[in-house]
Amino acid sequence: MDLFSIGEMVIDFIPGMEEASYIRNAGGAPANVACAVSRNGLAAGMLCCLGDDDFGRFLADTLEQYQVRRLKQDFYKEAVTTMAFVTLTEDGDRSFTFARKPGADMFLSEEDVREEDIKNTVIVHAGSCSLSASPEAEATVKALRLGSENHKLVSFDVNYRNLMWNDDVKACADKVFEVLPYIDILKISEEEVEMMGGEDNLPSLLRKYNIRLIVETLGSRGARCFFEEEIFEIPGRKAVCVDATGAGDAFWGGFLSSLRLQGVQKAEDITGEIIRTAMNYGNVSGWICVQKKGGISSLPAREQIEAELARQS
Image (cartoon, rainbow, N blue to C red; front, side, top):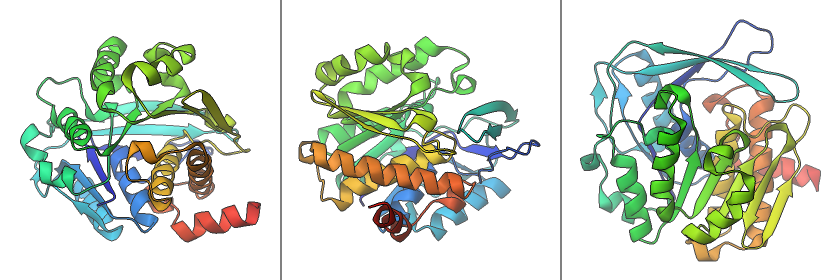
């Protein structure tokens, strides 16, 4: 596989009532990133827990449709689904209203993560939502550790959602800092920067934890990347938010895809020129996703991204 994606908490975003509602089909960040990678013609696998309900079956069918290999086949009779009403303005700003569907928590266990799956991939991807506040949910930590030990490219998305961490920002931050030694590529949104010590602290994180690069998404203002002693920036566009629900996953799926399409096998292969190309590729991917107003169903294919890049040049 090109990408091994891990997700524990399945997230279902549904449309709100306002005219500006941003409609996202059910997926969740790990599924969206895996599907985005597969849409670019790369091989992706996802380890996840699915509920034995309409939503769980929908997501299983969607992963199959996008040719994402599902590494855990079990279905759970009770599932937790987080629902959010998302409003997206013309400038890409958004607001959330969360609700929680009753059900039993689902956790991936350490036994679910097989080292052979990690060894047979190039990129291992996860996020802080899948770390979970629960002490028994250690599958993500194991996957990241194995990825690092097996010299894979390890990608991590800092994604704080107070619903999943019971409003305990410090607990989430502590868990993120615990796994930073395993991370090669860190994605962080403007909202989560303060949780990591502020923007001025990002370059020191690179050095302290030997992180290859940190990408900070800036909503409708684009994104910036901290790499060695350089900072690369890409501008946003009107009605473009690479960090909006769905679009942020499309951006990251496109970014990781571009690394692989440029021949990156390990962190040491990444150069400034490769980063510039990947950021532009991801930006266009997120832009197309926003324009089509959706999540998994609006993830662009490789030819769409490359056609838009060619048009711009």
